[in-house]
Length: 295
Image 1 (tube, helix red, strand yellow):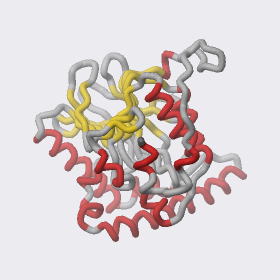
Image 2 (cartoon, rainbow, N blue to C red; image 1 turned 180 degrees about the horizontal axis):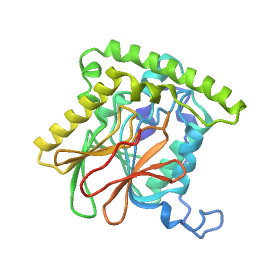
Image 3 (tube, rainbow, N blue to C red; image 1 turned 90 degrees about the vertical axis):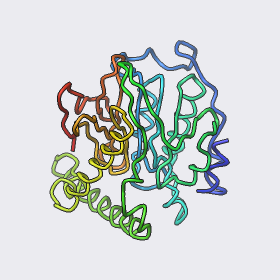
Image 4 (tube, rainbow, N blue to C red; image 1 turned 90 degrees about the horizontal axis):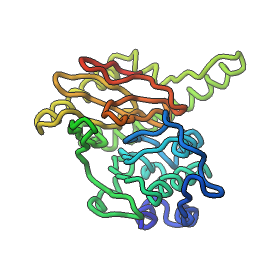
């Protein structure tokens, strides 16, 4: 069961919070309301939810999973943050709600594919198994409705820091947490003045030269590997930077995260890909000749 695998992260605290989930069909008493066609997709790709951290936007994610429906749900890594849970256990009721919604979808007929990332790498030994109705894979090839093949992976194998200097990756994780904490404090002040949310981490990604170069190198590396395999595109997470853009003949897609941007990548019935927000707003759509980054 998936609860057994999660014991690697939280031996005593997490498992008792996962009740049996009984699927309720639309139209039954207590069931879900009629589905909104605008929130019904062929495929949904989510990553970097970082359940078990203070930065996780669990309430928004649980609501997204309740209201958005799909035939296939890909969990593209860093869903549960094992790094953080090993250091200090932190778990909110909204994090449990996210797990429940995922299990409910699996039991109600949605195909759920979990591709672990570096923060939930303890699940990688379970690749090839089905845990509680969830297929665990190291990576996958997804065929869209219009016949294109996309490599689906978390992406940390294209991050030299994660692969070759893990201690530095952990240090960067602490620095990232600090940036998120500062962002929240600034956002609190902005709310007093009636202003919207502002993310320091996103600002640094857009403006700091090394961060911009890092994102570009990561995207190019993913595209090169995808092209070497003879595939049409790549879908990944890891860098918390949602995007759809063409790199040569490869369509590079990143579904973003649920710590800062709260975005998902979705496939429509015709195979077209879009990045959407937690509310379902389309932020960027695939274009035949080119696509642009979201953030």
